Amino acid sequence: MTILVCLDRDGTINKDENYFLGSTEDWKSKVKFLPGVVKGIKLLNQISDLEVFIITNQAGVALENDEFKALTEQRYQEVNEYIIQELAKKQAIIRGFFGCPYVDLKYAEKSRQRGRTIDSKYLIDNHPDWKPNPGMVEKAAKSLGKNLRECRVYFIGDRLTDVKTGLNAGGTGILVSRFKTRELGDEEKVQKLKLQYPNRVYIAKNFLEAVRIIKKDLESEPPCVKSTWNL
Ligand SMILES: [Mg+2]
Image (tube, rainbow, N blue to C red):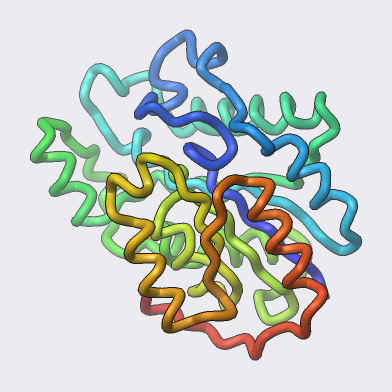
């Protein structure tokens, strides 16, 4: 069975200080990998039949205020390619990336409250790719000639939506908790989710611990895979 490890980008692979990476011309200097990420991806690369992907919501593309003008679909792809290249230079191999610039109504409303406006062409409520929907994970599987039922899916991320995406793809979600995660109350919500799905939800202190959880979990039988699309 193919093992698909999906990684959120901002706050999971690289530092996220609400940069909207790619919105400024000095974006390359803001790409800073978080501790344990390079080592963790290298450990994943040693496991056979395992592929690593970046799966990222890119709401910044949808924002049309002047400060986000440079963050186009082309730019976010450039940012993702750069991150993958920089990791590859350190022998940490990512197979590919998928990004979703289509925001939902909830995000649009939150943005409006912050004085930000959304380009209407990117406002598609409940787009299948918008995390926590599993559309991008499906695309990653498809890029390997597989469907989700033929894959064992893990999703590592710093937000509740990342964990839910893993579950919605019929797999396992691992929260990498950090200050912002706790501040937003996501860790508490993931704790509750863990009670419902004890063998499919984990909370890790950092990226390396998340990788260790995957390695240990792979030693056990795969759980009965059910799609729970509506989380
Ligand atoms: Mg994140």
